[in-house]
Image (cartoon, rainbow, N blue to C red; front, side, top):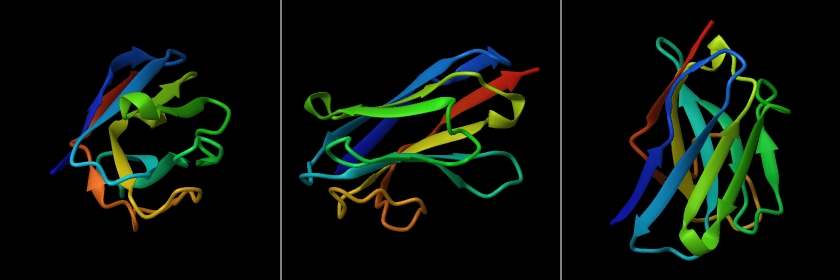
Length: 126
């Protein structure tokens, strides 16, 4: 059983920062890509950022480019999403996900991400 557990969400004022963490545990499946998605009330889940197994490839949604930074520490089986310059429109539940079929490719849709965390709430006040 593979588990992904997000942490680090919370309430922050506009312009503030948060760092989300995603701890992967359980039966390992070798290399995997990691992605962060978010879902705001009444909206579909959307891609935020992704990173390859080696960290050599990263990809960001246009809405967060230049403000968010994705990273990972494979020795700790943990991924991170540093969010700076937060805006009220960043308010959402944030999910991390693992793609066990990709080593160098970063997927930007939900398809291919087989394992998901339970989500962590990020609320940005104006």
